Image (cartoon, rainbow over all chains, first blue to last red):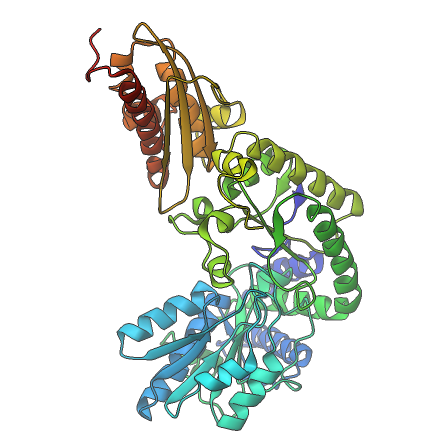
Length: 394
Length: 131
């Protein structure tokens, strides 16, 4: 199998897996227990926290371990909203192409009386900081903008947006789930107040992540119960998963430069090759882009058929097509950058890492070319485009 | 667990009756405005019998499989029988479709019915067709 769906999830690193197994086998004690065996688990937990904090340029106490990216997003937004409400600030600024872990929370908050402004992400998939600033109001309690988009890979001007928020005294949250471990992300260098991360996107285990909350910024718990995580996240800690996450993050940070460079070269090889297909377009800015993201729309075909036929050829990829969404709507991300329904229907996302070989990249290119041509061969939409009955968009 | 039944995958991978009929007696094109799938059916009808049927589909695996199965179910059959084709029959012949993909079989039924209507309009045949 050629695995090209690393934005969905990644293979666990061997070192992380070994750590996880070893902690589960040797250190199953509860970190809250007072005897030495429990306290050893507590040490493992705190060592992991220090590692994560060091990689991120944060203080240990600013790291809250959670059950993953979605939980981190939920907690940061819910907490900022609750504190905003206390001060009569009930306006939140975000973007139209956030992950559903952000957008659906915002939808819920709207029902609870909040107002939400979603700024435009433009056809290049990039947020304009000045438009974020223009959206700010006296009663804005939070700005939340993702670090890098999960579907089209565009990397947002987080520094500029953060500086605006800092200057205007508004809390700033960024969902860095797709960015961390793949491009440089350091909070000692960036004006962000909250940052969400998920271990399984950087070769760690699933079901574990963390939330960075800047010291001095209040954070309310989402899950109430015991006093774990200094009262900010109840529940016995997933010690093995957390330790493995720290190992994976450390590893990702150590190799970040070389891996990103190699991955970006393969990405550009894929982009060049796929661009040869007639009437296609790359989604998102080619430069401000995650090293592993390749996202295309092909006219006249539908994404799920493309994925199934690629699967038959041993290639695992993803699409923002309506048919793959489980609902009837195509990806909100592709619609947000202005792709019309028909075009968004024919989308393909390849998300690679540095272990992909050039031969595999070439195999992906030739397979996609074949399958797109085959599907267009009996597509009534393609026939109308080719006969001139409807105009080509791409 | 596979997304689709073996039957669906077979009809998706090896769709029957793909293509167009240049001198078709009836053509039907339908689309699901929401999801965006589009199906086009071409019929060749002689003496009340569907002699040939071809299709073109822009859509997902189950849309392609539904089109293919629908053509198989009506090919060589009397028009009167084709007119009673339901989406349920298409889905059952495919050993079922996931709930959220049932609309693909509806599209196949509609495409066939639309092509039959086109044929009736062109030939002035009264509906329903006598055996």
